[in-house]
Length: 400
Image 1 (cartoon, rainbow, N blue to C red):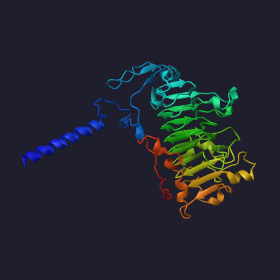
Image 2 (tube, rainbow, N blue to C red):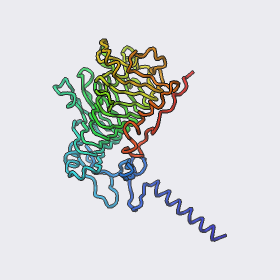
Image 3 (tube, rainbow, N blue to C red):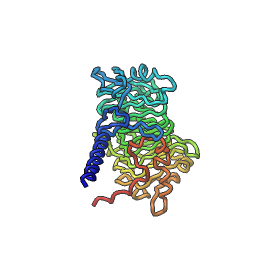
Image 4 (cartoon, rainbow, N blue to C red):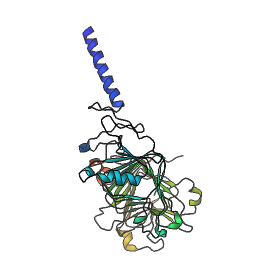
């Protein structure tokens, strides 16, 4: 009996050691790993798509030239730069083509970085400290076209932004002024804030995923031709120019195959902080067709009272093009809140606007817009980045 008890105690001790090693971010090589903001340890298993969060850095951007974080044992120290552009050009830019298949992680220390830049390399990851801003103020009114106005342009594939703010401060009077332009295929924006006014986020092309991210703007502030899913994001409406109306999306699909589109799942639509009172006299719509087959889905979303009861609007507010009302695909399913289509008679009477319901057997039609089916997220998004694998839950019961 004593031998059995001793054996059981040994097994318990071994189990405790394993638990402690996992909690501390240990790995099978014995090399210690630092933790980032209390997140789970890095699992670098490319075949399984599991590598999040990045806990060791290739470069550190620090305006104050503070000490860089200690690298893992056996690894060389990351290089510290004073600007993000330097980290991209001198650090990531020094990689050869084969290295571009590997991730290059840049830690951006807290600060205000007044920089505009394009990220041309593949697999660049920007990790912020949550309170830092990357900021610019280019716009159409400064003789810059819409694409060139972007504060950050992600052109290389596999771009990731985590825990930072990207903003364009040009203001509503300066018209089109992009904060983030992404034509990066298989890109991820996680726990960030993208802030501007008109044309804040240009989701240009490729498969894209936005998770738990705030996007603030006025006119067409999420636009482009990407195949993108927005999960648990906040769409925050701001005050536009006097006499103008707001539009959240201007999606640009222009073919019958609907090979691009925006899906908003379990998102929240509301006034941005400090804008609610003035927005009471401003119409805000879910979307308008930038191209004839514009393709947008809102499902499981909390639509605040900022959303106009008609829901959708023509490209020119008072010029309805009948043919376009038939070719767009605008879908709503399981949304709730004062801006949802609880009374579908108030929505625009367009053939292309569909308010799906369980009662009509529409669940299967909505299901194809989940992240795993619409952008194949389970094939390339790290398992540690949380998003709903399936359908959004049914809406909560109305408040008494």
